[in-house]
Image (tube, rainbow, N blue to C red):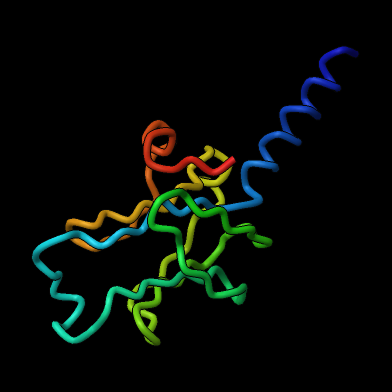
Length: 124
């Protein structure tokens, strides 16, 4: 009988992890520009999940983004154009993999492993 409350608590805490995505800081690399941007295009990344608001991730700290679907579609916007999009799998969210990491050297985005997320994202 005591196992049921513990199981409910575990299920509830797992569902809490899946309620948001966390975007790592998005800061421009000094020096060379990536080929995704032409020399006149400014560093103007924004993100959108599903049909939610378009936001500009912080340069200095992680940015939390509330989600409402089990398989969110992440859209990466540069200027006014969607340049990348990908689904975050429900399995990953259940594993606690909710960190979307921006690697500024190559200007790439990825969903990182849970052990990496602790170092790369810090949403509370």
